[in-house]
Amino acid sequence: MLQVTGVTGGYGKEPIVKNVSFNVQPGEILGILGPNGSGKSTLLKMISGILPKQEGSVEIGGKDADRYSPKEFARNVAVLPQMHAHAFSHTVRATVELGRYPYQTGLFSSWTAEDEAAVTHAMERTGVTRYENTLIESLSGGEQQRVFVAQALAQQAPLLLLDEPTNHLDIAYQQQLLDTVRSLAIDEGKTVVSVFHDINLAALYCDRLLLMEKGGIAKIGLPQDVVREPIIHSVYKAAVKTQAHPELPKPQMTLLPSLNNTPTKPFVVDETQFTVTADSVQFHAPQSLKTVSSAVHNPGTGWYTTFVNRHVDAAYDCDDVKKEMEEYLEKGGHHLTDTVGMMTAVQTLHAEIATYADEGLSIIIAVTAGVGNAVDVSKAIEREAHVGTINTWMIVNGRLSDEAFIQAMITATEAKTRALQTENILDPLTRTQATGTSTDSLLVAATQTGPELPYAGPITPLGKLIGTGVYECTIRAIQTYKEAKGWES
Image (cartoon, rainbow, N blue to C red; front, side, top):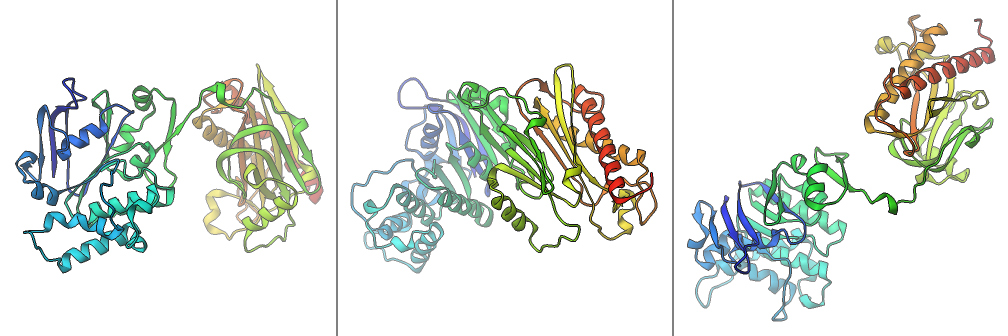
């Protein structure tokens, strides 16, 4: 639909945009990114004909853009500029109706049913119908932006050129607008080229990204190929961390402030920060710890200062466990967004907590273990669910990589399984070697200060401490459980 070849130009003799080439197909959204002054808006203005090109060509629908008459061009290309100046006062509806100008012929053209349907549809899609009789200058900047988007949609052109369309919009209207643009591309096959300031929004909604630097193309490709830490750092001179969107195969970026601006100071956690009662095991860190867990409350990844392993009765039964856990934590005075919560049917007074250290590296292991309903995972398909709990915490004084967090969980699981084997814990239904229980929980938390710990496999310094610590603490916890239950050794 759009072919840009060797486009060069700008506002003066020295070109701002230099030898830019790309193409965009029907149904595709291309996002243009780049630092301030990199030529994003200038490129869009040359594609739309607002600025003349010094060199190169722009083809739209297989035809040179310079060969279109103004009305022909407007029937093929709808442009949403970054800023609007209002020479005349119009109602919202009259402003949107201007999008139908390219379809009017003669001095006394009649308004058709097709024109009416296009305007009504555009206003409904952008949520401005309720303002149709309101003067546009009385609207907020965000509301005005949506009106001009509606005007562009009413134009019904196969190519949409948008210059930072989400400017002045709050997040709900950003989502609504970009969802609308996305559906136009998918449902109607429109070609969309849009300048973005927000890299995350562009990565989320665009099929491809064009990253500009000093008037040229620094990178063009799929979002996951463009939004990469070294590329963003090189072009924007900013430190960032990229990760996958939690629900879509799209990259998202987080800005990393300089260390001088962060409140985190080096600190060490130790056993004195634990409180053990008949109701719970609690750990309170002096600063937030980066955490990965399979907890009931706040599972997954996050930063937390309070960790609670709560005792519940073996007959505990609740329709909404998460809500009940939140109520318990709130009643205990815990801040819900700063707390990780687990449950165990084991007596928390029997928790095994110990520090393991070697060569300047230290970790704290905390284990509660009840193995009355142990499970052989290889035979789990043959049995119904039964409650049982081995909860394992690993608190690390050090900086863990993402890889190390995952490896730490693997190493801990292997150590736990080895402890069950040593204690000859069998699956009571299959009479085979147990590997855990059906409701085991695992937590790894790190101070993210101190030594760098990129790995936590069994033969690494951290892995060795985890393996030894989890094994020994699990052994002692199982032995305590056996004694409490009167099991024979």
